[in-house]
Image (cartoon, one colour):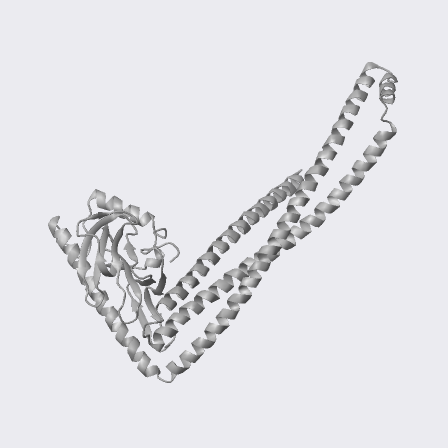
Length: 407
C-alpha cells in the first residue's frame, strides 16, 4: 500500500514538472522573441542615428564608440537568435517523437477497431442478436446480455472517437512541426545576414582602432577632458538638488538640507513611485543609451575610465523629453555646458531631464505620466541629440536602468 502511494506521488510530481517545463518553455520563447525584436529595433535606431550624423565632422573616437555600441548590440542579437533556434530545435525534436508515438498508437487503435468491426460483422444480423437474447436461461441472464450488447456498442463508438481525436491531434502536430521548421529556417537566414554585417563592422572598427592605438595618449586626454565636463555638470546638478531640498524644507519649517520633509501625501507619492521600480517608461519615445550609470572602463581606450551620475540617451532631432512619472516640477535651471534642466519631484524622489533646448513647464507645475516637458538639445558640433537623465532619492544617486523598463 505504501509503495503504491509512493509511486502515485512520484507520478504526480513528474506530471507537474512536465507541465511547468512546458509553461517555462513557452514563456522563454515569447520573452526571447520580444528581446530579439527590441534588439533589431535598437540596431535600426543606431544605424539611423549614425546615418543622420554622417554629415557632421566626428572624431575618430566618437565613430569607434558608435560602432562599438552597434557591434555589442549585434552580438546580443545573434546570441538571442541562437537561443531561439536551440529552443525550436528541441521543440521540433519533441514534436517529431510525439508524432511517431501517435502514429504507432493510431495504427494499434485502427487494427483493434478493424478486428472489432470484423467480429461484429459476422454476427451483425438483427435476428442473431434477438436469438442471443431469447436463448437466455432466465430474465437476469437476458438483462446481462442486453447490457453487454450496449457496452459493446458504446466501446465501438469510443474507439471510433479516439481514432478521430488522435488523427486530429496528429494533424495539428504535423502543422506545428512545419511551422516550427519555417520559423527556425527564417532565424537561421537572419542570423547568417546579421553575422555578415557584424564581421563587416568589426573590420571597420579594427581599422579605426589601429589609428587610435597609434595616438592613445591624445585620445586618453580627450576622454579625460570630456569626463571633466561631465563631472562639472554633475556637480551643478548636485548643488541644485541640495539647494532645492533646503528651500522646500525651510518653507515647511525644517532645517534639514539633505532629506525632504514629507507630508502624508508626498510620502504616499514616493511609495507609489518606488512600487513602480523597473516599470517606468523611457524619458524619450525612442533612443539608445550611449553612456550608462556609474564608473566603467572606456570601451576603446582601456587605460581610461568614465563615470556618470545618470544615463545619456541619444535620440532623434527635435525629440521631446517626457515625464516618467507624475509629480511636481521642483526646479527649472540653466546648467552650464548642458543647456537647461527640469527636475520633477515625486515625494523624496527626483527625476532630472537635462540638456533641453526648450522647456514646456515651469516651477510648481504638476505634470502627469508621459507629459512632454521639453525639447532635447542637438549638439552643433557632433549633430547628436542627447538627453542626460538622472534619478535621485533626496541627494542619493540612483541607477536609472534599475527603474526604467528594459533600459
